[in-house]
Image (cartoon, rainbow, N blue to C red):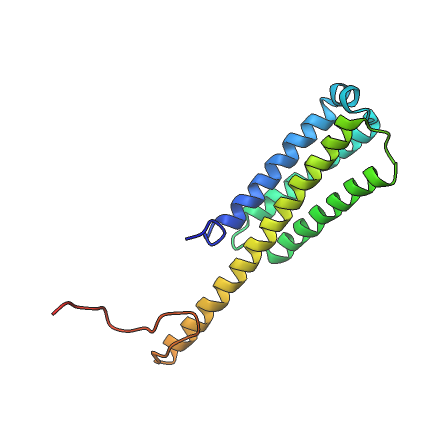
Length: 163
């Protein structure tokens, strides 16, 4: 079984996303003086971006802990992550910040990390949708008393007994 196929994959990715939001938020808000001096990114931007990550982390944790997973909530997390990546790239390309090389790397690395999380969240959501659809089709066939072959699933037969 691949990692993405695991039933708890999407919840795990969402929990990692929430945890990294908290860690990055603490780094950018509490450690803004050190980060600002190393990156040449203004402390005001670091503090406001860092503080914005705490309610985002709470929302992502809420989505991750719901049972069943809230599909609309997962989509909001994915869209928010894409927005964060685009805003980070805009900061670098538009000259909105006057960061040094370390600052540019800081923004770029966290943008790549958020993009990877968004990809895994999308892949997990897609896999979950496919699994749910397959189970519904299997249940419908069994409910009708049929034992027919469904595309992608083995034929339902009696257990094999050796002679």
